[in-house]
Length: 433
Image 1 (tube, helix red, strand yellow):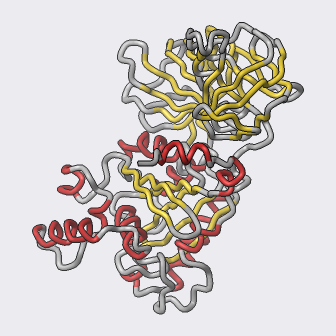
Image 2 (cartoon, helix red, strand yellow):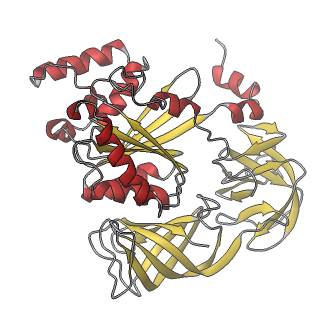
Image 3 (cartoon, rainbow, N blue to C red):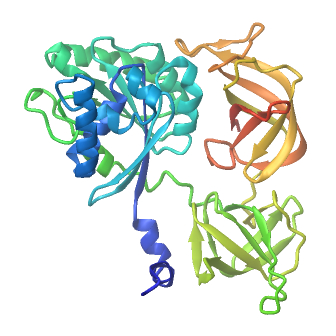
């Protein structure tokens, strides 16, 4: 029998891999806005559900006394979620169409699970934010939009759901769009799309609705398949945080020394001149390897092993960058934080910090302001940042970080804070230039 994994590696073509587009998107919105139902509808109408899965959900719906198949059950995997009819944890789902592959993060709508929304959205290309047509723009809509903007999600699709419950009224849709447009002028995300849908009935989800002929835009599936995401990844600034130094210590690889990690951004090629930070020493790339096979070039987000022509003291937490294109380096960091703990952030508090592959300790030197999620105004007078709050802080780290602004590089521009006593992640931070 052929080793299919080996065959795959032998035939690996980095350029073909780059052209295989994968869209990561997250769903967000208030409770009962229909996020899980929307994802179930996407999976069902795009023929991405197996027959036995459908039959299982149909039987579960019947046992619950529901007259139709509850598509939300495809993503509400936890028992507590199914009992309450809500999403508690982040549910990931995978599907594909002839045009693209997709990873969905279905995130919860409750305020107390906003931290889960941050987790699900941290790697997304696009955020689908649902609005109940009957309720309009609510606090959670604004909260999730601000978080999506802070997390650097390049594209937002605002889906006005449950249009069937307002008789597919164009005026209701136009009012919501106008209100969100005014609010969005203060967001960093500029590519915003608006779609009126009914996730329950499938209107404008995969197929166009004949009940909203006044809407001349595209369906949600068409947007997901065709939105331009090739420029979302930074392929200019090469950043390679070293995760592990490979030393086999065997007769076959007696002098082998490789540096393994995931390329955070940019492209690296054999023969490139690179600088090792923080030491500042330079060398040339001797080889770039993936699963034991040598590549002419590699790019984000591939995980590879790099050999250099010179023996340089390099360890975990160091970073290889292109000569003449250096990131910033320092111990005084300005960042926006999404707080995830029920204990507010402590001024002069000490926390563990994880940034790319670098571990350090940090002290909160200043809480500059808390962001009002309704008005986006900055609260500067005695600001206290608690659970699910967003604010700006200044930190001092015990060791220099090698970083970029988050707006430039989502990997090297972000870090997490961990409580020293409980080892629980308490903050997700985005570095400000």
